[in-house]
Length: 485
Ligand SMILES: Cc1cc2nc3c(=O)[nH]c(=O)nc-3n(C[C@H](O)[C@H](O)[C@H](O)COP(=O)(O)OP(=O)(O)OC[C@H]3O[C@@H](n4cnc5c(N)ncnc54)[C@H](O)[C@@H]3O)c2cc1C
Image (cartoon, rainbow, N blue to C red; front, side):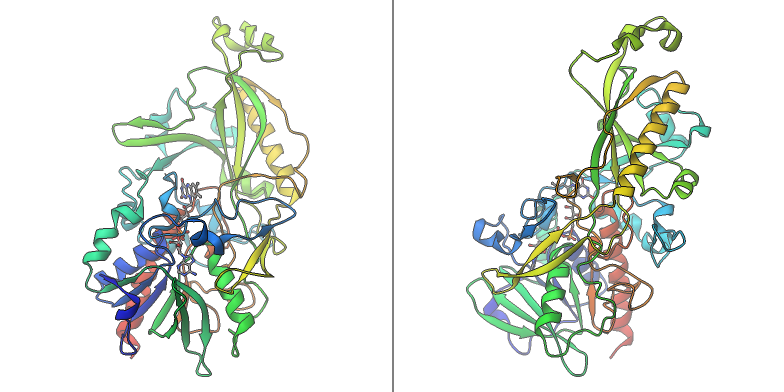
């Protein structure tokens, strides 16, 4: 149900208070409701996209690398699902593995644990066919993607698509009709306070400026990968009894998936790496290095896509006329750009911090210093080159490298707009912000949900994993509600 600020009294009692009504918060609230928990869902925006004033808290600084802090997220009911693209794929097994704890740090929980409720996540995201790799998929991709021999070390994979589900539209009525969920719109969580007994209290502010405090049995931050960290940073800086977390991890290890075009390929015009519709829904081809290759190289997880280049004139087009390589009909060749999309190696220096400038609510704005290690770029360039060599060796095309140096620290990168890592999950305090259940270290009643908890990022878009984690968190918190008096 929707509730108004004035409906809230000191006797309003909730099992769980959730800040943020994006995919993470809405999934959690409705899954908890199914399990009988009474939830308060606090959302900064209303049902319509925020105007400039409503977006003001998202303004910040990004330096030296420019980053679209404002346009990469939305601030209203449904969150950034209001303009997401619906690309879906779970993270790979290797993304969960630690390699010597050095460059690839992995997750502290198993993949099977994170995706225990993945069939629920498919349902929330309205994904028809949840098969991503394997023989059936290779069959679907036949002729439209390059078929490399197994020994090449690259394999074909797919993305599937959510319609895309706009949570604000699709689940608005579910929230309205729910008895267990009380949704308070146009209300900001300002900070989390912590009593001497360690219990959390929220300071909330209505759009008209009125403030109040509220405590539930459990509290969940689900405000997106930047606001989760910003709120924790500000809380810890301004309250008397900060969260007893070791290691200064809040806001650190900010990561995004970035795309970079590293070369060009002359190949069959029948290749199609764009989204295609099939009877079973949308599908899109990509290639990735096999886990064995990735383990040996220590490159960050990445995938390779080919995009048609429209102009016909290609230097050395004579390649395409060489029947030795391309058979009797070489003039049918087409030019593609070779684009690599990657996660990045977690980097403590890639971080959000607070600046002196404050927003209209008096909360300090963020400064983002997004770093990608130059070693990551070097390894990705090598991988693209290796891909090109294998395509040539198989007689399927000709590759030309077009980028020869890593982007400078102040150059913009094509960002996926997936804000990850800033409240990273770890198996013990001193190595991250939340534990394997997404609970803040040093707190019994405060949780964080969303891609800010990802300790390793893979190359796959994050929302499927976010929603799977939210269902998992609902099961965990409902279990604690049954046992904690
Ligand atoms: C252009 C674009 C395309 C994308 N495409 C894809 C894609 O194809 N596939 C994919 O997997 N992902 C994609 N994403 C990412 C996807 O949108 C996010 O992963 C997803 O929305 C995150 O969900 P969330 O609930 O964690 O956060 P959000 O969706 O950001 O929701 C956070 C909510 O918290 C609210 N909030 C913020 N501050 C406060 C506060 N102080 N108090 C109360 N409430 C607050 C906000 O108003 C918002 O409703 C895309 C993102 C962008 C920008």
